[in-house]
Length: 254
Image (tube, rainbow, N blue to C red):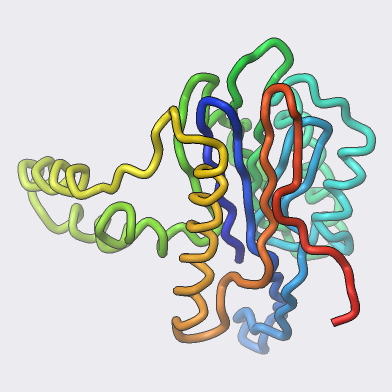
């Protein structure tokens, strides 16, 4: 799995990710078995002035998701976030379907595409999925300011909402309609306020890193193989400055 975080404020969109990738295989009874984990996968990629962050399957057929996204970036001109998301979604789903038809495992992944469309003063973000269950959907509209996290959302959601999302859904299912409404209001009141439109860019960067580090830290101490980890990748996109890496691990001899 992965943790992908994005923070949108007046002056920028910040996006970041962990770098762990896990190799799995199927046991004799068709259950997934972890074969190996690596700590240096790239999950944030630049597409012109836009950014894409991916989670879920690390491969589509025999190809890494990173190589597919890098190839797409070389051939695509990013003038519209929506158009880029729709084109990328079609490309990933077509590629995944082709390999699946050849008998390879079905890729299961999600991605967000974010940045500034030409002529827009504010950033927006679109979410896509493979296999495609619906058309790409906009999760952050221009002039909206919010924080999102994907891949392993439960850990940070506990901190923000004051309750595990799964436990919240179980609780809702066990009470009557009137109690559901009261319970939902109580959870809403308990929710932390983490984003303000006027937050400076540096603070948005710090918040992105906080989400990633909190999730990685908690994942490390939970039973089983950690769901995320490794060095952080963080990029910031501004209207006039474009895409800029803030934290980008480089290849080196360990």
